[in-house]
Every structure is written in structure tokens, then in C-alpha cells.
Amino acid sequence: MIPSTLGNNTVLLDWLPQNDLLGHPKTRVFITHGGANGIGEAIYHGVPLVGIPLLSDEPHNLFRMKVRGVAKIVEISTLNKHNFLAVLKEVLYVPSYRENMKTLCSLHRERPIEPLDHDISWVEFVMRHKGAPHLKTESHRMSMIQYYSIDLMTFLLTVILAVITAFILAMKFLWRRVFTRSKFKKE
Image (cartoon, rainbow, N blue to C red; front, side):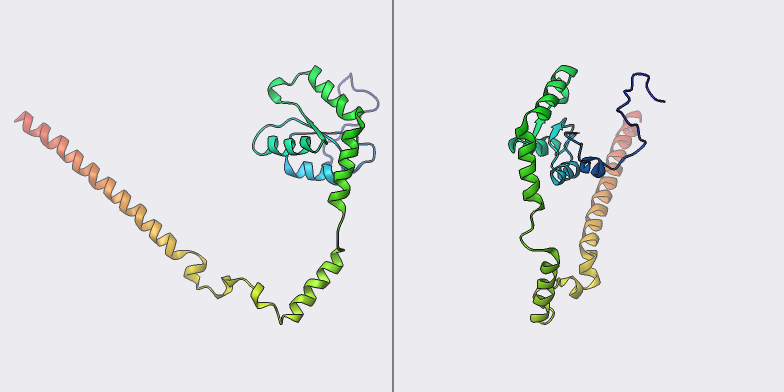
């Protein structure tokens, strides 16, 4: 259902890929919770951030962006329309946020060597070193017992069974002790 107060410059969609939205040339600010993928996409497209961290690594991610001058943070505990609007206007209208993000974007996109050249150099490296055996993992030489950690699982299972057996024996001992005494008291 479309709200009656919705402006004619607003588009409602069921779903829109975040990366496509950030890549649109008219996107000026990204309001985010501070997840690593969203921040990475914002950096790639050069869009400054307004962050509302909720949990986990989000406060740290947004703090790193704030230090670089590309984000403002609004704490969820103090969030209201007045401070949110003030932060949003600051990120929109202070040019340093966009400039700093453009700098970060260019650093992120710049490649010292082209991907094809990088791949070719690795193929040549492997050819020069006859398959580069020093780079191969040792897992293909391991026995099945080592590879799947069967020895460790057997040890842990033995310890768990020993603890369970000790617990059951202790409970039996206490049970007999309690009921044996009550039987003597009755006689």
C-alpha cells in the first residue's frame, strides 16, 4: 500500500540491489548499520556514510570510517529526528566528506599491476619452479586419520564417555547411600 504522504519524487520497489543503488550517480549519502560489505561497496562507489551501529563489529567499522573523515555516527540510544537530521545535513552539505570518500575510493580502486599481468606472472613463476612444490599444501600427503582428525575425535569421545560414566557411578553411589541409610533408620 502506498502512503498518501509519499512525494512524487519517491520510487517504491520490492527489492533493489544495494550495490546498484550505491553505484547510481545521484546517490549522495548512504545510511548504514556499518556492516563490512556495505562499507566496502560505499568505498568502491565513493559514497559518504551516516552510520547507526547496532551490534558486533559495526561500531568498530564505522569508527574507522569516521576517523578517515567519510562518516558520521549516530548512536541508536540517542537517535531522534533532530540529531539524525543534523548529522544527515552535515554529511550532505560539508564537502570534506565526499572529497575524503573520493580519495578513499581512488585508493581502493587503484591497482599497482593489472589482474591479467598478475595472473601471468604467477603462471610463469610456477613454470620456472617446475610446479612450485614448496607452495603445495601438505594435506594431500596426510593419512585419512590425520586429515579428518579421527584420532582427536576418538580421544575426545573417550574423555566424554569417561566423564559420563564417572557421573553415573557417582549418582548410583549417592542413591544407594541415601536409601540405605533411610532403610536402617526405619528398622
